[in-house]
Every structure is written in C-alpha cells, then in structure tokens.
Amino acid sequence: MKWKAIVLPIVVAAALLAVWAGVWATGAFHESAFPSPLAVARGFGEEMRSGRLLNDSITSLFRVVCGFLLAVGVGVPGGLWLGQVLAARLAFLPIINFFRNLSPLAWMPFAILWFGVGDAASIFLIFLSVFFPIVLSTMAAVANIPAVYFRVAEDYGLHGRERLTQVTLPAIMPQVITTLRVTAGLAWLVVVAAEMIAGRDGLGFAVMDSRNGLRTDLLVTAMIAIGLIGIVIDRVLVQLTKIPSVRWGYDR
Image (cartoon, rainbow, N blue to C red):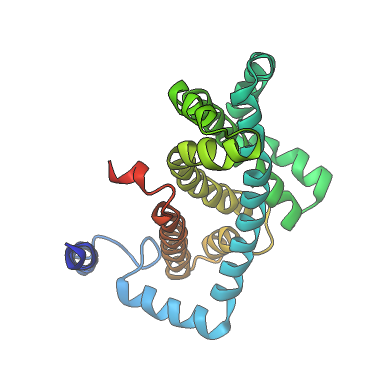
C-alpha cells in the first residue's frame, strides 16, 4: 500500500501536467494570460538562480511558524482551562466565538497601524487566525472526555499534574492534532493573503509582484511553491499522529 501512496499521486500530477500542456498547445491561452509548463519551468529556474524563491519561502515560513507556535502555546492551555472550568467556559465562550467569526484580514488595517509592514503584522494576523479555533477545539475535547477516564485515574491515585499528563492530554491529543493540521493550513493561507495585501517580501508578495510585472510564469511558480510547502507543513504535523501515546486515536 505504501508504494500506491507514492505512485498514484505522481500519476495524477503527471496527468494534470499533460492536460495543461495539451490545452496550452491548442492555443486556447496566450502566454500573457496563462503560461505554458515550459515557461513555468524556465521561470522556476530563474527564481532559484536569483535566490528570490528561497528567500521568499523562508520569510513566509518564518512568519507562519512564529504565529502558529505562539497561538498553540497560548491556545492549548487556554482550551484546557476552559474545558475543565464550567464557569470560565460560560463566561468566555460567547466572546471567543465572536472573534472566531471575524476574518483575520479584517484586522489588517490595525495590524499595519500597530506593527507596520513586516513580520510582526503578519505574525499577529496568523495568531488571530489560529488561536480561536485551537482554543475551541481543545476546550471541546476536554469537555467531552468520558468521566470514566477520571474515575479510573482516581482509583489509581492520579491527581494534578499526573492526571493531566497521563489522562487528559492523551485523551485529547488526537482531536488537537487534527485541529493543528487544519489551522496550520489556515495559517499558511493567511500569511500569503497578508503578504499579497501589505507585504514587501514573502511568497504572497511574489504573487502580486509577478502579476504587476505581467510575469505569469513567475506567478505560477510562486503558486506551485505555496502549494508544495503547504503539503510539507501538513506532512510534518502528520508525524505527531505516530507518537505512541496518541496513535490509538488514529488506529481505531
């Protein structure tokens, strides 16, 4: 089965590439409207030789990692607290849902006013896009832990930190990891959008700069890089599902 997971996506990608080349060969598109695969390949080589694609990728990844880790570091403990304390959940859940439903890009004017154009503004927007879903998912996971888990923990004399590390966290981690994968993709989308609107570097800025320069080959190159890096980010987070203490949640 492992070879199928490698070969089948390659076959699909090759088929899509063949369709792309075939449609372009019919003359349905002009180079200025949509580039040919060969033009994109040349553009990719140009970007790699200049180092711009690598620099933009590193810049965008840096922003995503900082904003994402900050949101996880605050959101998971916050969700644990809300999931265990009913009064806190009743008090804060409405306001959390309110901010969760606000588009992170609606904060763009304030982000620029407060932090200027650069890393801090993008990190702030990524944090907002990821923090609230993580809090809600962690809270729901904790609140839905079967009570029998805690009764068994009491029978074994587990309290405080031991109950947290040996019962609560293993019970919620499958759901939390799934949320991390979803929100990591969301963070990647937000950083690209933020860079397109108010960026001076990064892959989002590369997309807009290519469009403004009428370089559709470089535009598609940046789009391909965005998609591939998104896949890599997800594959990295998938490795968390292989941790022995949480693997049970995916093997059922």
